[in-house]
Length: 543
Image (cartoon, rainbow, N blue to C red):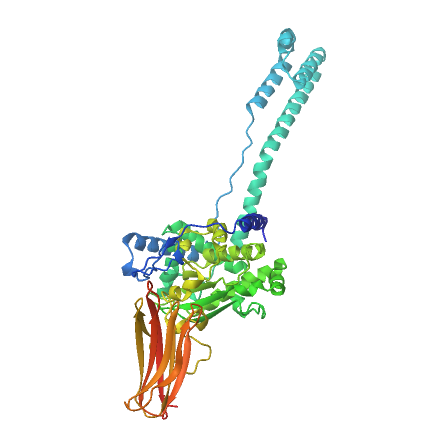
């Protein structure tokens, strides 16, 4: 880990400590607009975001040009093998120039040795001269008394001494410049040692534009959008990502085993409304002190945590279809229920490091980050992360309080793909339902609605799922036979269901034809209720 990263982490740690004292800090957020009057105040987001098209024909002219320019730069860099190195440049020759003072001193020395009588006459005016000058004058006076041959020798000695002094001074001034040039040449030499294969790929997609792979445009557009279609910045980002992957050996990370400790911290399950894979991140696992110490207790274990997170991202990318019109991003759900608070500084430093690394090296591969079951202190924590995030990344954040989890998830995920613990119908190893349709009924304030499930066969089994968002209703289930003379059978007697109730599943085996009637009574005088349900009729022949 570099000194710069460690310094940054210490800064974040100190900010976390400060923020933990101010956990009740409130951060303003834009309330997500809804069409109906019952707008959930617990659902917040920083700003809206809409994923753009990857079809070339849908791009603006400026975007088409930017994509074309980036492809040209990338093609040239790969072909000329300059993707990871600078073009060779002629070394800059450093010329040692004489300083004006040194030159003047040399001229004076020559004048003194050639005209000693003049120096002697002007000596009263030379009080400001340095010790070196006085020494030279003394030498000149001595030379005046010596023979011509000795005078010439002495003159040469003086000139050599002056030159030596000037050279020494000049060498000191240029020493720093030479050192910097040596460093630059060393770095350039290292860069020149890295070669690029024309078959270079990223996430299984060829990067050489001339190969004509349609997925290449999809990848390059992600880097361009992450940098607001600034070609040079997008190109540098791509280069840094490729170097980062090489340095951290990301291409082989899928084969690494990170043990069981992190197995329950995140998982992929289901698809969203746009068929994107959904990844659930569960922060409550870090609330166990023993596990927390194993994961965050050392620098190596924290590094393993980051690599595990990168591996999870790589697994998600394998489920994508990287082509125009394909599924090219994931949906991330972050469950903060029972998440350790800001006093767990190691956790928040790790979260910051993961977010920054994912933002910089996996651009536009996450459609949204939805934070659910958000505690109040999260708003203080989000201010610590904000400086490290781009505005585009922030625009993908959706934040919701516990009371509105199901309602928020339904905006992005169909009910039958939302796990049952979040108010949906998806259960592990469910054998009762597969692709049955989900229906919705709205119950206005102070009114009741009935849902009828037909049982046309004289013998069979009916199975149904039902959930009321926010519940707080009276609910009952009955079987009503087709024969008017038969008795109605109470399947579930009427009861009031609280807001914390999850989806209900029940079944009824009928011995005669009829129907199941589900009754929802909205006792609220202000709020309407959304009811979601699905059912399946199994006859004897299908059982």
